[in-house]
Image (cartoon, rainbow, N blue to C red):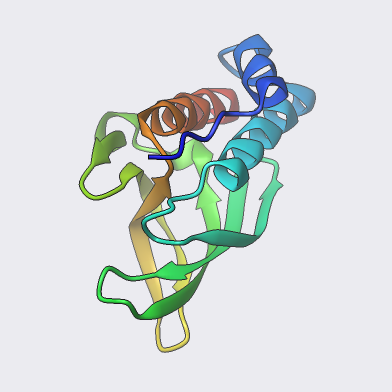
Length: 148
């Protein structure tokens, strides 16, 4: 398996960001680290790529394209994931044929594919390896703390 290294700058910025209620600068540093990790550690099993990853303060929006296990292609846009409403206890990492992070929110957000627009409260972010999954989960939890 090809290993993807988390950019050192992103990891240092993530670890250096203060925990707890965050200043706009600290929130932005954490958000930048999350975005860098997401874009540099995509799932090779899903052949994923991100067209966009953007934060507006404590809200995340992103568009991801990839391949379902059945071989079908997808492009999904997620909007308005509010990290002040992240359910930290229900969010976790896992592994099946790819490593991933499950994020559960107390407030629903928008999921839009070519065929559906839904309001959902859980998303799965596929990543390259366990290290990236753990780094992302820690970043998301840190951001949730900064946003409360």
